[in-house]
View 1 (cartoon, helix red, strand yellow):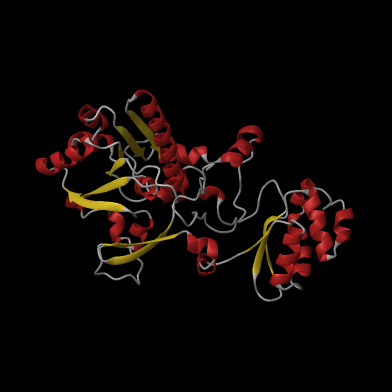
View 2 (cartoon, rainbow, N blue to C red; view 1 turned 120 degrees about the vertical axis):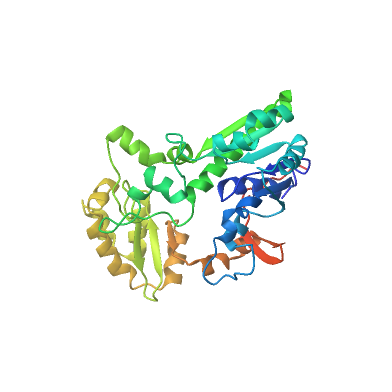
Length: 359
């Protein structure tokens, strides 16, 4: 990856996931990123978010490692004037500050936008907030998933709602903040001015509701918990078992794809049945359709089914665990390794795009 930001200096005052993910993005692309942790509070709280099998001796958890790479780490107590002045000196020469302080806390600590912009008028100050609607509410990811609709439509109808098993709202907010910072950098390049870039986890989550929001806004449809199923398409998200014990998921998006699937499975009579011939009817009759297709797919071995479906452009995926996923060549190529404070750490690249020049 090109080191496009090698002349950029970033001061990361943020902790947990969203802010550090933004800092790591710039570090991956060559920027000097200095992560300033709160010494009084023991540093970034995710240092202590360990799996049961992790060593208690190291101050670096796997969770912390996931979004901290290529950075310099320093600990300061912002309530101590000398420490605060140290950080101010760093910020005077910085291009970007990433923060997730509560507004009142930032002011008390001398780390608010006005104070830092007075020190460095060309500074881009990137702030992550929790709830726009309630700034004082503690905003951990699962709380956001609950209050922005994600949990309410995730899981199965006969069970409790379920969260998505990564801190998705933090990751989405990080992408929003990166985009805002990049726009601010373009503006700075044009007129030399600094900017205040702000995103809340709440608004980032709402912006990501996509088709589910439009289904409600246009048709009053409130999505129900359907597991992996899709409210508009079938069979899409249905899970099937093969003869050799593997599980696959189908994502049939068109009538043509459904016909191709039936051709392969040798159940073309379904395409002549009014209950299954077109998508709108398949959505209505999806339960019975799954039962029928299961009877055919369970007679196939995984490799043969995948080969034939992929050969006929039928969307199908094998359900894999992370050991299978991270053993693939693509995943292996995305693993970044680094020693942090004596611990060998690994994580996935946050930069997934590739840029090539015309040379």
